[in-house]
Length: 212
Image (cartoon, rainbow, N blue to C red; front, side, top):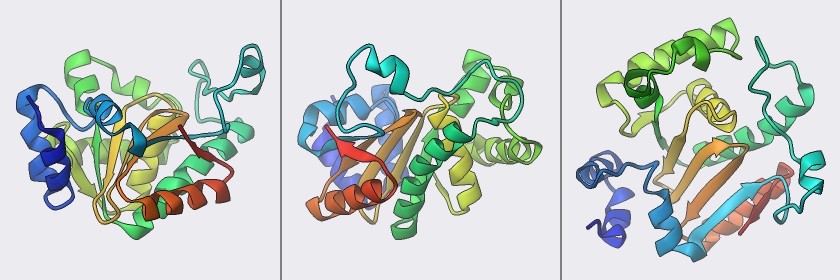
């Protein structure tokens, strides 16, 4: 059985080697999110557009959705502006710490059989080319975490995760923060209160809420 406390303590010092150790438990940095939520509920927060869960039917009117049926690059300016808020949060965290990212790209392409065209559906030509570069770059590691230095790559992974095309986990070792993304919200794990307060300030600055 995975000792999450020991795993979490090692993760910040040796993120790549430590993250690979959980493969033998049939876990990875994406799937282990639930264990963090159950073990450290006081350190797990949702980054959302609303301060509390919305009641029905207000949620049908107010919640912003990504249109999966849309063909071609996204033209909905309201959606893009909203998406940009979450991207800015990731950008600010990246400014304070290196980031290591795991996606399920290769699981989707190699095992689920998702066509690459489906992943590229709403991307521009430049974004599609960048996605191909990311796929090639991450192939040796498959779906384990690797370091990303260029923000254009980090941004595209974030966009595709917010649009529910892929699932991703972002590890920021210097500030001991983990972010999980696979919808138009972000789930965060924050070890230290000072960084929790900092994350809350970043969210507030960009019109988002850090909440339970």
